[in-house]
Length: 330
Image (cartoon, rainbow, N blue to C red; front, side, top):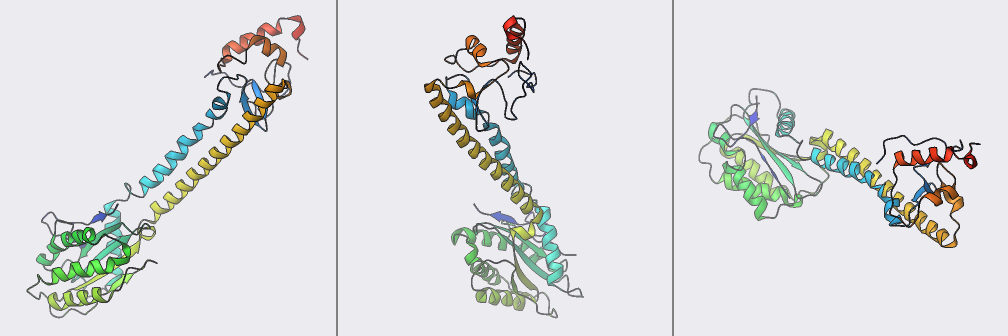
């Protein structure tokens, strides 16, 4: 069956080119009144947003609890990008390229006397994957010519990609120039009776340039060697469909979390601004939610001290209040 080009001299395969407290939150306050669904800890609540009781760095502490959203958001996006690069294995490209070879060349006595240059074009139009496939009955000298950048064609192609500043829009021209250089080195015809089926195939929506010069080079190779050689170009989303789908899903979900994060930050800062204005008016009581009443909380805790909440200590404080006659449960 066809195999990856490059022979047994170490040049097989292709290449890529491119660029605090542990206690649970009580459901009710000290008097049995149910907390709002937004309740987090004793403090002020406006528009469903928790605003710290302490005035010290109130804005920072109000929004800092939302930063946890950034971690999974960034992880989802990074994993998505890595799935499109690191998890994109050479074996997957080989498998796809072999399948394309079987679809381009019909089964028959000459099936193993053909070559295929498989190209994967990326959406940024500046990256490609290259994989040469060679039939088992192609002469070993030609086989060893088409491999990775250590082989004749692979090396010439890689150099020309860099020389002509690789862009998908001039891919056909770069391939033509590279194949012409190989044609100039061929001095012997290896097979006489092969059917002619050399062509350039573009299965993408990208403009790869004029294929006239490339088709001439492909036909010239056939005339010189007797072997068909075709170029098949496909999009990343086609070749690595599973990775592409995973990339889109993870990036979309990560982006959604970032949008929610930004929305929460804006909403939190607006709530802090409102509470600060009400603080200046001395009108904070109606926005307070805790587990003891506002006056008792104010006597125990100063708003001018740094933000600090210890659930264990707060539970002891609640028990002290319970023991006093003027703090009976309703």
